[in-house]
Length: 423
Image (tube, rainbow, N blue to C red; front, side, top):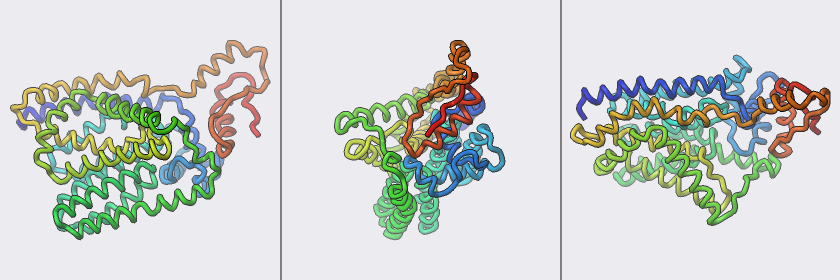
């Protein structure tokens, strides 16, 4: 690609990427919190107003490992406000971008990778919430670059395997699908070493990946023993064909609507360049693509044969890998590639327009507490002082959360009556 035209496109895309970043910051302040965020605020409350923070208490959150809630708990000692809690995602993004830049500096795809991540739905949406998914995205992005460096640096195989083990422990304790990604990418990198006749690399990455999964396996084992059965209950969508259809819908919506929809022009340019990229059969591209495919296959195997676990957000773990491959494909587009160049020239304009199409998602009010307040103001004059009955979704282990939400979310919002007394 011509250096001058490449620089022009990158400069324009950098400016245009300010739009999704600005929208993310506005949504962090304005988006109303909802049930999953209330749960995380309750678990991580450093003031004693929620559940007293303890490892045993985190075991009751059967859907998530403990790392994010623990870090958020420490983060909130500075301030207990919701805005400050959400700002942890911003800190994670900045730190992750700096680390990726440090590990992969000098490569032509680096800036493309960072800019494509910055405009991605998977960052903009989840940065507005107090949940673990931005941290998961950042750690997976770092995992991609660590794997790339490990396959590039043949003289420090054991060192990179050690780095992988530490990163893998962190990923597994952030999200259960993070553990799945560690297993898949670790296996693919190890097999790549073996294909290159590096027995040391194969065993180093195999041992490192297995060791990285031990902490999350121990956590799951302890959680199953401590938690009540409904803490690990997953809403059933059926089995076999119906589960497959449900998983397909989540996957297609996550990849095609959310990932590709974040910037169709960049996605089209990546699709044009990927043929030339894969023709080179560089180790990192083959390993990453294999890991993505294996992660998807195992996710659907779990969906069909065990529990319907697949949600859109489950595939956060593969998004950095897909974006990295896309960035490398775009960097492979030559100046003589007419359609590739046309899509790249259009990319900055779509980067500035596309975030507005996702406004209903970025500013979604799931709990609609404001509408409840408006309804009671208009119709509740004769009910002053009466209990306001509220339904909370969740099992018995979340009864404390229900009281907390009643006190901290409903009481300030509901203008008449009082939140219910829960048993």
